Image (cartoon, rainbow, N blue to C red; front, side, top):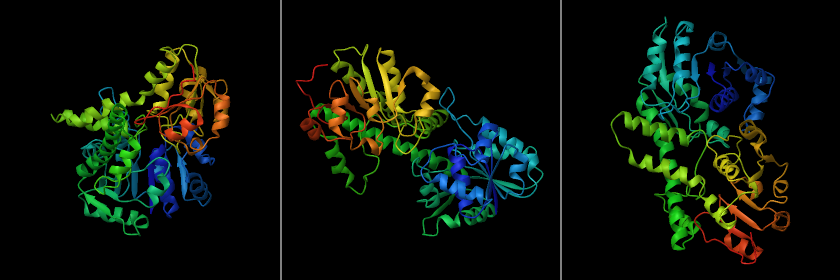
Length: 442
């Protein structure tokens, strides 16, 4: 079976590469000529563990190709995936212009029955809009299917190749059989393909991300309360996470969620509710709390330095919104850095993968270190923004020697407070007792 994937962003590239790995012939299409040239020459344009090996293998074996020519890319394709960006508009709604533009272009290009699949995260009712745009100029039969992605950055290859479930929205028996055949290699272990109508599939994606964002935000609210009553949020997390009704995942307190999905999708679902005259109060609270949570360490940092950060040098560990990715979209680190700069501080940062992307945004407004320890030299304090494994077990003797003050503000709760007390650090984390050292003077 031949497949076309329109869009070579995160979702499109993972989708195309993984389908090629299962033996399908895949052509990925993108209008970005520079990006396509890189992909054609074997350069992976995103960082995703495990992707590069599959990418290189399938290019070499001729199953994975790239082009800027839409007509060429979809020729002979039985299934066309739309993996295009849906950025938030000024009002919070998902912007469908890229999807609808391509849909209109597809109509006259279809030569035989084709299944067109919305892989992008799209609002309820999008499949109908795409169908209408294609139908304006189509001369052959086609179906539009909703097939939302549930990829976690950092483990996206595994998620695609061994999905917990595949959601397919279609009322066409013909399209259903093709999608069943398409995903058969991925569900051999018995995980389900869940068929439903298109609108329910579209809602499923938003509901999943909104629920997970709510779970994270609820735990951050608990953490904030723990700080006031003297409880330890880690103990609370373990206490509730063993309840099978709640589960252990997405209960880690910190400085909020970021990335390409949760912020955008929660906002879009809230906008959908508003457009349908429903006041989705929980989502409004989730967005407000998460925004405030991202920079909750800044007031404590300023307090430590007597109310001013002017002239202070701050080391930052972690720039991506989560580990195992170079994605900096809605990353808490960026918001904290912008405030630090506004307050007159200087910043030197280190991240294993995301520094090149940050340079495109901040340029030389901050310094970039070649190693975690390189960021610490002569810094007045360390702020931890991303829970990369490399930050979990540093040599604290070296850390204390390089910093001007043994001061750590940890937005990801990487270390145990009792350990930091024994090591002589002033240590502030989220939802746990603050460790103070009287002899440390800022």
